Image (cartoon, rainbow, N blue to C red; front, side, top):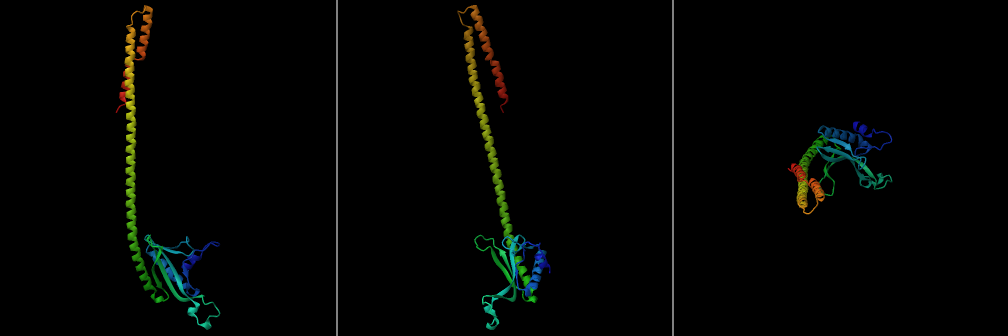
Length: 263
């Protein structure tokens, strides 16, 4: 059968992943048929059934519209002492378990409530021993599954909307922080530029004051009395040289060059 072939036909030497089905050999075919029908129904409504081997090798999972479920199919077992008469025990221990022929299918829904300890909570358990009643119970199960999926979908959508809103706020916050950082950077650059300008202006003032003192010194030398002609010529030569070095015209050029850099 299809379910059995799909699940047990694995490469030789590899550990098998199997559906969570626990029945006697006698009831196995019926269990496979039911599971095959269930998987087909889930697939038709956009869901998926798979084995999650992260916990164990028979952890049968269902995903539907973003919600996750876990299912198992099992045959009820009872202790031998609860079933057999004394003369029918055949010397077997009283704690041995025997299958009863009663098949049950159980679905658990994922519980995302952080205040609850259990990760999974029972959604529904149906008995599938009576073939004539399976269709009605399956319909009831899928109605229950539908209602649960819809309610969880609403919560998922609300949580998604909330997360998107938080992401938008975070993006806006980051953008505002980036703008503030850029403003701080520009203000810092402007302050440094202003301080540099002030420093240059102060240097110009000091230099202007120094030039005037030098030129006053040169004028005093030119008007010096009592020097011989030769000495006077040497002094004038010196004065011309000093005036050339401390020329106001060069200083004006420096001021003009500086002024062109101003905003």
